[in-house]
Length: 166
Image (cartoon, rainbow, N blue to C red; front, side, top):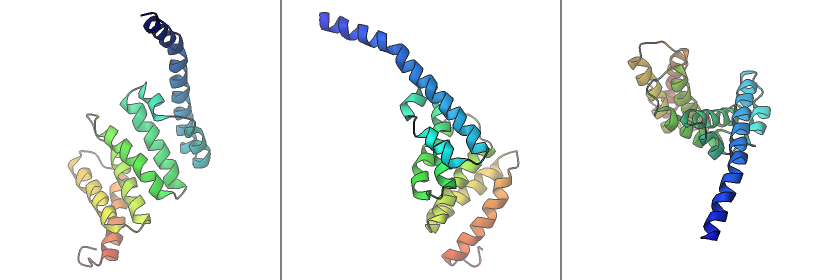
């Protein structure tokens, strides 16, 4: 019983430290977002390496989604496509839990397809590009990414030998 009480006291004493680490993670994620906006991907990635996903979980699914989206985006823009895919997929899974879809949602799907396209995995690229087009057509809003996706999908079809689709 004394051991249990000691364990509980240790947890209570360390809770503010854990909360502080989570708050620090949120600040780092926000700072990385600003750097990504300035196209400083290597700097943003370096900051994000100091964050662990479980720290972002303290702030909910949207924070975890942003963390994965930002890491994936940095890796994508640093031409590390294979490494970017798992992060972008995690972000996509979190984003799909939200009740709305927007252009960022379509850009995320496009980003995964573009990674596959750059890796010359055209069948996978086609799957994600088609998803962007289908989801984009179902929405009441217009996103510029759908036009870019159509262009890249045409190239993918050509590379796959589907000249009529291209």
